[in-house]
Amino acid sequence: MKAIIHIGAPKTGSTSIQRFLFLNQKALKRQGFLHKRNVAKRASQFEYPLAALGRVGRLPGGQDQRLRYNARSVEDINAQVKPHVEALKKYARFKDCHTAIFSTEHAAPWLRSPKLVRAFDAMFAEHFGSRLYVLYVRNTVDLLPSTYSEVLKRGRSVTMEEWIRLRMAKKTHYDIAQLWRDTLGSENFSIRLLDPGFLEGGDLYQDFAKVCGFDIEGMEIPPRANESLSAPAAEALRILNGRLPALREDGSQNPLRVGIVPKLMELSADAPRLTLNAEQLAAVDAEWGSSNEKLRAEFFPERDVLFTPRDRAAGNTDTATLREQALELLSDLLVSFRKR
Image 1 (cartoon, rainbow, N blue to C red):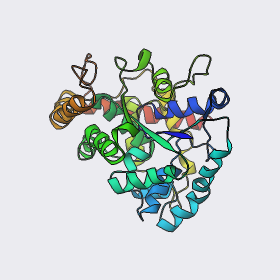
Image 2: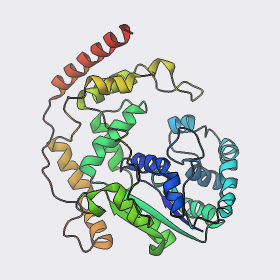
Image 3: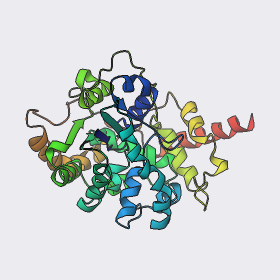
Image 4: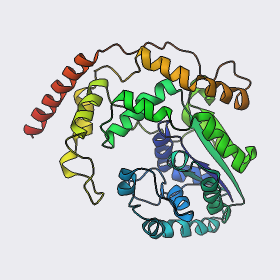
């Protein structure tokens, strides 16, 4: 049996792919493709990159991740992932299926060295004759606001400027693509652009179906998921995160946070979206421009530019105005909860 492992990256439609796979398990199986979810209510199969970390004696990078994924020690990791790793051997029982599909956007950010990538691949190589690792990357101009929204939802209280500095210090798209290609071989790695001008039919689901080799016709398309925060909602949540932690000390969700993020998004549905300002746009171009060109030249030489050019209007809401909008939104949030 062959394995296709979608490794992310985060905020490139990963949740959409995972929901699509889950909704269409029966339709996929009729075409010989097998997808199974191990952990209830967890779309990303984080247990597999977590297992790779455990195999080499490593922990996830941040303390919040160690709490969120019950990964305070290598022993915790290995005990948690053991049944899921052992369950991989059961895939051979499905004689009517020729390909197993996995999806975990945790792989790309957690597995940042050849040793970790090899440990991840070795886990699948024990049960699957061939493996294809699929990575989607996104224009950094869109990616940064989206990832900033996500870290705020998870409880961080950094500013956009702080987040950009942190993100720019990490590996680029090229670094990640080079790592997986050079470690596992170009025949076992496929990189795709989350760009309407590149995607098959301009659509993520059609593109993923093409990569995997199944026919998408007649399959159920899930509604949009994991939308980003508006600019006022992001600032309101950043303020709130500094006063009301998302997680308790034991790693469980803080019950005082229940319903806050969806309500903020509902109350600010018509507010301006998160965007980079002119200074931030220039900083991104300066930091990642040459790396993106290197990615284009090596992986997409047929393209004149890596991402389809489009209008890049910078955000122009000043800090004072955004702060005022955020405080008004927090007031609306308080009133809405008091009315329950």
